[in-house]
Image (cartoon, rainbow, N blue to C red; front, side, top):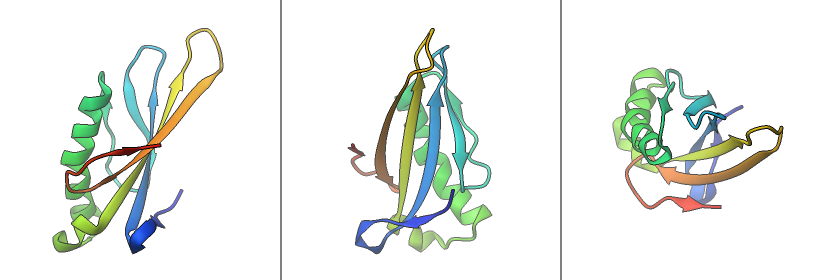
Length: 104
């Protein structure tokens, strides 16, 4: 997993989250050191990402604060289906600063 360039020349970081059979949302993989989150609600997890990611990008990856608004986060959600190995996958992008989320 690596950081990539998003449309419009923005730097993009990928975050993979999973919803367990128990309904808990957890971050599984990310190139942002320290981004380890677990929430019972997807909206709560999105808020936590908004709150934590910019701080981790500046402190752990040494990205200047004035460049944070130009960074996109690409989030991939995988949901386990109870009693089966089927998975539902979706993704969305968001800016590190609060802006509308675009869902695929």
